[in-house]
Image (cartoon, rainbow, N blue to C red):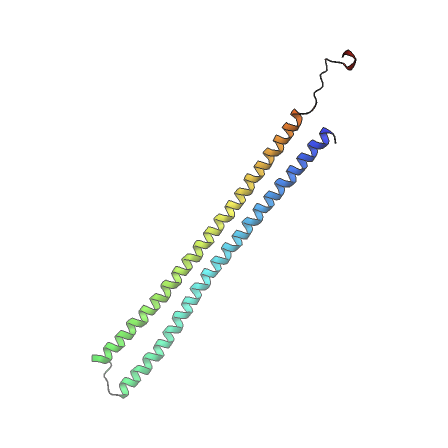
Length: 165
């Protein structure tokens, strides 16, 4: 194979490899961005689930509260003062604490998902940068190979003729 053909082959391989590295970097970034989008969607689902759980708890609490008030009234207990009022206040505080705990847990889970999304996007950016660095390295190696190939090529000295030897 001639020197020109070898140089063309080296350049061709270098171009193909650099394109593949770029495509891999873009693909990895798209995957990471998709993972980030999924994590963000999961955070939204956690929020919706917390709202649903709180609403369901509030509904059950109101039903329970009504049942307790009816039972206390039937037994002749005054629910506006004394032990009836203390029970009602205790139940109200327990319900409030349960709602706050549900909201807190959801907020922590949502924050974790959003952090996961941010980290995934960073990983995607890093994958893209690594691909760019690999492309630069490929171009550099291709150029180096071409230079090395040219430095070992036989030199023709125009001043010496075959018949002069």
